[in-house]
Amino acid sequence: MGLFGGGYSPWRKLVLLAMPLLSLALWENVIGDAAYGYLAARSPCVHGYGHDGAVYDAIVVLGYELQRSKTQPIGPNLKGRLQQAINLVVQPNGPKKIVFSGGTDRPGMPSEALEMRRFVQAELARIDPQLRVQLAVEQASTSTRENAEFSLRLLEERGLDGAGWGPRVVVVTERFHQARALRVFERAEQERSARSGSIKSKKSGAYTFACFAPAAGEIGLPFREPSENRRWDAWRELAALALYTARGWI
Image 1: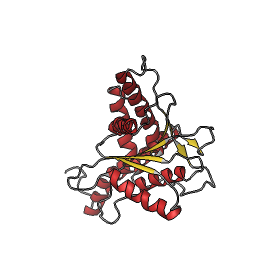
Image 2: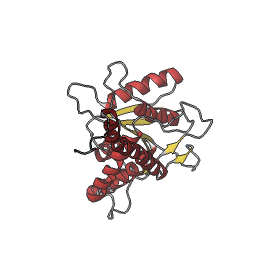
Image 3: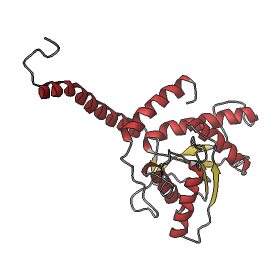
Image 4: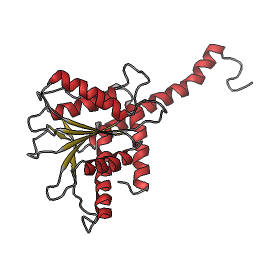
């Protein structure tokens, strides 16, 4: 008689077959949203730059996959990160050095870092043409760990080597990614310092790291959490957390 017997119409059979798939998709969305919320809640981010009384020396903006568009390669996720960086540099005591970190996996295409710099240059020229901000690109990285290793190397080459004054770095990324990103940067700095012999223990390093979310009413472009790709970002971040924990990178 088959799976459904002989008393079901073709349409009813189709509905019965589709129901488990629809239920699975619904639960995937529910769990994905919950996972994103959990990751965002773990963010160590402080609301409002300068509220902790510290002055920071540089910003590192972590890249995100570019859109497949030559005219608008910066998607909403990456634009949110860049808006947050702009919001920081326009503060009176905000850092005036930015490192854009992100390579590309598409041969012949510009890196994430180059596109980020192009976007921020245009926005800063529009907001305040008199503002002087040093912009540097790190375009070899393809992972958060490489973001940290290569950006720290670039900062060291540019003179922020921590000799006597301990530079403070703001790491800019989205809330779901912030907890892992900060831990990866801290671990990379511990390893860098241990290799260079600047410290005898891996418990502390020359650089310190933080992240911020703009407070209401701050000058500059407000950072709004993009809604696109949230579930995909959540699943990918959970997998990355497992991998980085297993390899001792966080």
